[in-house]
Length: 124
Image 1: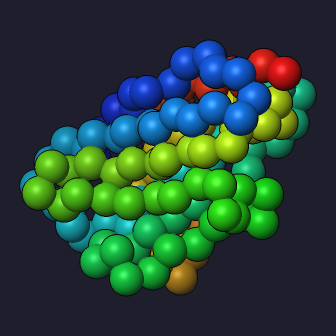
Image 2 (image 1 turned 30 degrees about the horizontal axis):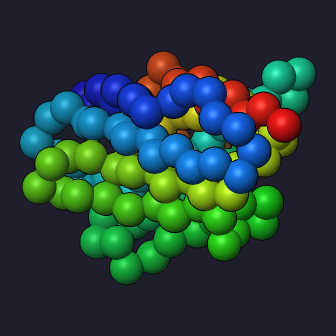
Image 3 (image 1 turned 180 degrees about the horizontal axis):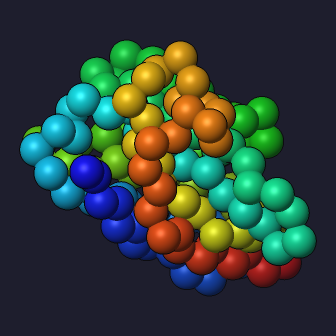
């Protein structure tokens, strides 16, 4: 069992930056590929970014490429999402995820554990 707790959400103006953190419980953090999904108001949840256990592979949604960076610190059981050049359309609840299988870590059905989410609001 893995529990995920997100932090770092908040309100920011367009063009600003935020860093989300997600701390995982348990001693098996290194076994999991980690990621972030988001759900914007009135929209379906969508993939944002993912990173494999060794940080050798990362994936990003086209909408955030070049602006967001995912990273992880296995010694701290923590995954991060650095978000720069934020846009109003980035407003959403951001969910941290853990996926055992790297091949499907960018898909909702491939996620084994979800955090409860943290709200990011970007104003124009």
